[in-house]
Length: 373
Ligand SMILES: Cc1ncc(COP(=O)(O)O)c(C=O)c1O
Image (cartoon, rainbow, N blue to C red):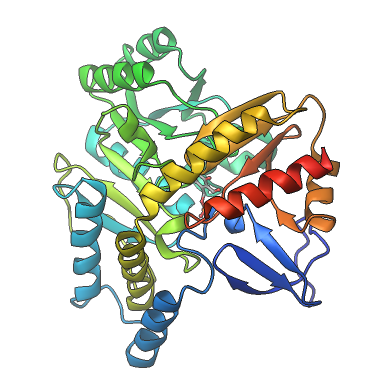
């Protein structure tokens, strides 16, 4: 059997990682400014993480959601404290798309409505409703195009008010910072007005913090810069540092109903031990603070680099927009300078490093970028 060929691959076989570095099968070392697509939060192969999941898999890797799982309870308690939402409840699943799928489903159960407002250029995943809420017709199959979604421009509160005033919108879903869409940031004023409008019209506000959350922007969640509290927050990527896991943080206004949501693998013992190890390292190494410090340094320094049209971002979620397509630049960074970066569309280079990136590593990246520009 061959692999189903849906990924255009770089010709690199990564076999080892440590902190913010990875190595290929030829022994070449790379600086990782991509974090495997914002997934690596505490760094590759962190010793505490390795120890925790190794011990857990040797004890109990999995049992079903029909029995008490103390690790899930510990995770809910620890995460609630770490992010400032200890009055919310946690539902655990395995991927970002599943988190958004469940959040939208719960919003619909709660309101009895079926319409959803999403934002131009949004990315929310590739399953049923999550992909319908994603503003990219190329990945919406005919079976997913069910007319639930209205896309509106980001930061246009008048357009949002007009749509919500119709009184039939179940949920608004919005990224804390748009990732795939090119590192686009909703303004604080927009989020505050959006919060107010959702409350006024009985619409559920869902913040997708799958890429922008878990400390990446220098606060636990990007929306916390605005001070709003959404009705649901979806998380994935950094929560397990590479172990597949995701969650929906659910406000107390939602009533849990036995059997309404469920999953076989979500919140399994091994996933929870990974997520608990991640939170240990966040505390011990002050990684949210580090993302703010090193991210601000990078954002400042990148403003001085010649040849970049615009630098956008918060903390360690950074987009560099160029006049011309960045495909060649990205390949040169990878093959000549041994630096992994991401992309958004054709002209934006995206930086999503592990949150443990040091000042020296940030400086090394600037030097390497200058060499290829
Ligand atoms: C903002 C956002 N939401 C949802 C997803 C989907 O997550 P997953 O690929 O884990 O389903 C992603 C993935 O890139 C994302 O960036």
